[in-house]
Image (cartoon, rainbow, N blue to C red; front, side, top):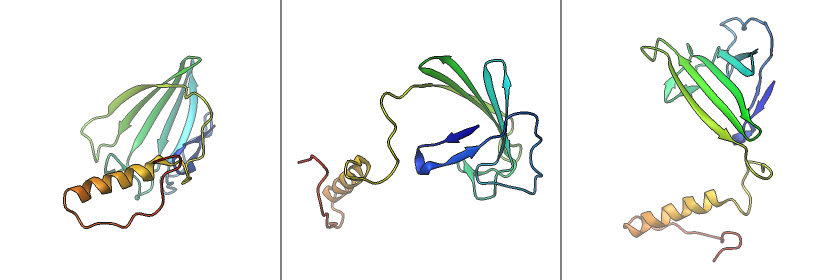
Length: 146
């Protein structure tokens, strides 16, 4: 199975079946994930994260992340995760969220003329200027904007 995240085109390749995890000496940026089906739920257990990765601000070299993906209906996916790392937390913890299907196409995550993220960063800078901070020279305009 392959999961492609929108941000930075992050890709996770997750083998399905009974394969064991890699040796603990083999660490990866997204860890070593292994997937299996439990009824209608895809369960992915991931270990072997490298020492650069942070989860909620903590290093996670001992992290075991268990994710559960369940299709609720044609437009909804239930995502659950259980986080275990006895070197960081006193006990495992679990969270769950419903993801709705996004309407329309998914566009590339990149800088482009209609990227309002940069525009909003600049708006924040202007707000700081209004509070008396040193001015910054701004060039250009947002697409279709005033």
